[in-house]
Length: 118
Image (cartoon, rainbow, N blue to C red; front, side):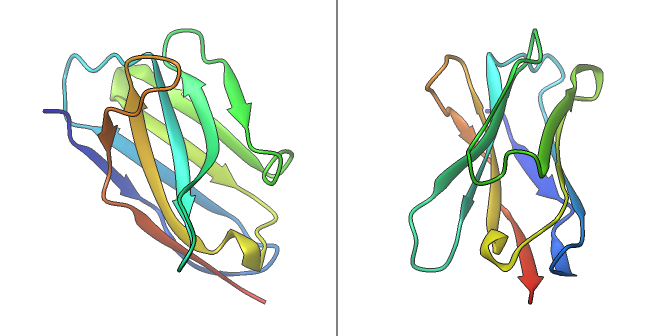
């Protein structure tokens, strides 16, 4: 069983930045892709960004394009989400996920809270 652990969340003012990390426990970790999702209170979980593990191809939700950057360090089994120009609308619990195919999310982290004040 692969375990994912997010970190880096916190409280920031609008316009500020945070960098989230997600590390996988498996030494031979090699998913097809990893992704970030977020869930605000009383809202459904929504897609934020994804990155293929091999090529590093990225995809972003329209709401974060130009502000967030997803990246990964394969050797460290770690994925990152650099979040700039944060808005109150970005407030949510952010989850990392790993999948063995394009639209699969086989493993999930516990989430890290991001709160953006006005």
